[in-house]
Length: 282
Image 1 (cartoon, rainbow, N blue to C red):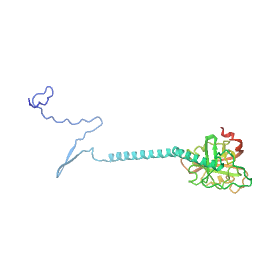
Image 2 (cartoon, one colour):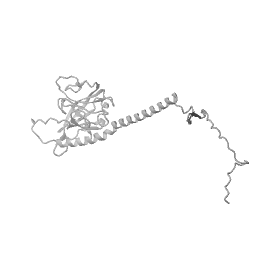
Image 3 (tube, rainbow, N blue to C red):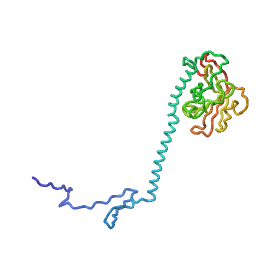
Image 4 (cartoon, helix red, strand yellow):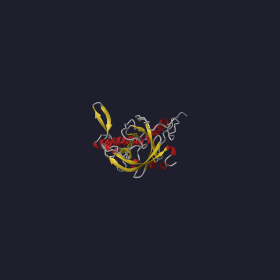
């Protein structure tokens, strides 16, 4: 009772336990074990170090490469997120603004708010009021792309932020001249404009009529070649005789050092009282 238990001894051991020197660590294949060496100073042994813990040129290079890699990966993720927002994130915002513009256009075109209902009859000599900057003026449909937009007046960055914009000095829909429209090259607007080819249909909706245009040409120009939106495309100063439509956007995608141009010529006009054009389906 009260006796201190004896420390268990290994099987086969006799006598009192003796201090056993610690076995040095064994190096694994491809590794080298470096014995730590104490450093003696005037105040005694202050620290220990080894050749493995000393910063070397190789270790500094490895650290630099690792940090650079982490920075580049982070930067790449940020770029991908921004690109994703530019392509998909803006679509929901543009669609919401397009719904609002559609309602504004319906109210401007008729007291019933239905854009397919012609406005009350007026004298043929009555000239429509000039369009207001930033306000909706027409509908634009591209059946091949299954896309449609409300077009606003003006081509400033503010005007075309959420909608294609009409060049103020160009003709209005269906008029002799060149009804010219600019739009951003984003997922919600003129992203797929390069898919249009000769003969493809573009439909413009006016207050009382539908205007059916057919693509006649597509080209890529420099931003300075503004003659593409002249009354006669490519021939500034020439008096127009045709009723043209021109769509402009940036090229290539994700850049703006060029312009993609789509020219179309009016094929026919259909009054709204006759219903929707067959080109738009049901």
